[in-house]
Length: 282
View 1: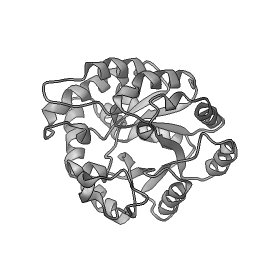
View 2: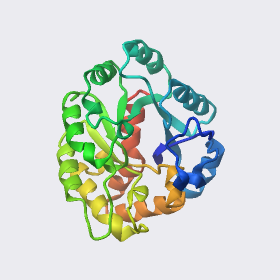
View 3: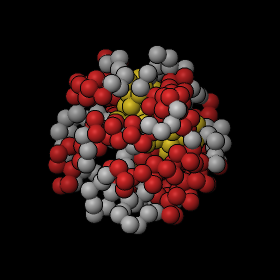
View 4: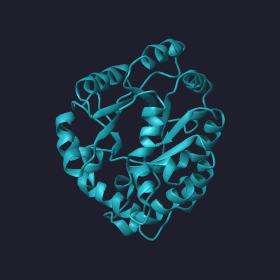
């Protein structure tokens, strides 16, 4: 089964999606399961993981409601207030939800570059250890040193790096600092990595396969196929790519690999990390 490990849904309004600027005009509209299902069927993708796009429990409930009425949504990565004292009770409540597979906080939007190392935040994250749930890490490449320290505080918790940690992708200016740090992070075996969100990190140029391939190569060497998963980042990807073009790009990149390795990246890793790991079965 092929799984899109990273996509979003929303009913657009300016208040809830303040992160959208003028450059996001083409995604300032509703994106709902019926819109994605058509694209997934065309690309022969069988299921998806819906990931939070708002920092609110309302968002978590919204995604769970969509997942309950759309069987192709296999899991939900929601949001909870990990810095609050009541977090343990909230995790208890939401861990009981069948489609909850993990949680995420938008770390890269925090003013404090060391937010991920805050004591109250880490105390909340520690509560996830009692459940077979994952934590998705959303950062920019500049946060990788802090993230390595963060991961080392939680060696038994399954963690997933979103969008290969958002390196600054530029023509003739490969991000060697990102490469060194992502390789170091990959030494932590409880961390997996999503091949997602890359097209929107390209700076000052239109993306193409040749521009992205060195970043693909670093991630593949660092994590290996069994700790990499395909994700579309739909509908954000529409800023730079169609859904099908990104699926085809990833398929081209992994084509030299064995069938079993390709299957891991296109679904097996996501199934193991999110669905089997959380006791959510197909």
